[in-house]
Image 1: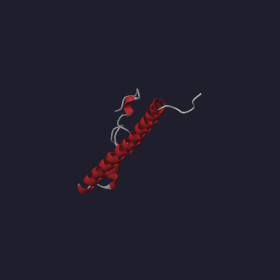
Image 2: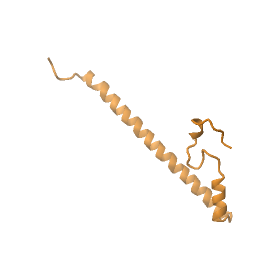
Image 3: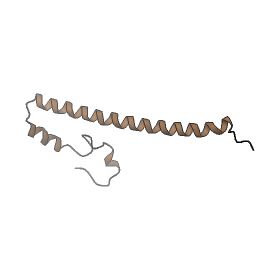
Image 4: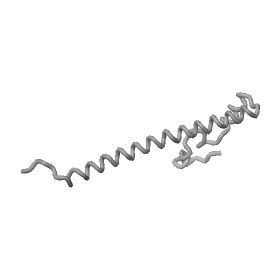
Amino acid sequence: MNSILTREEIIIPLVAIVGGLGIAAVAIVTSIWYKLRVKQWEMSLKHSMLERGMSAEEIKTVLDASPKGTLGDGCWSHLGSTQKHV
């Protein structure tokens, strides 16, 4: 019996492992990028409201009144639920 694997027997598992790791890496990077962009948007919104002369309490009220699925809650979170957001 020959215990040395041929080139074809190595390539398929290698491609599967590298492909799986690549997909996981892309998912992690895009998740981090999305969260960063949401934070940048929040900071821009807060800065804009401060420039308009709004107080910290008014800004907090506006941010608390935002609909579910925005401001970092995950825009796609509403797809899995059966509840209606008002």
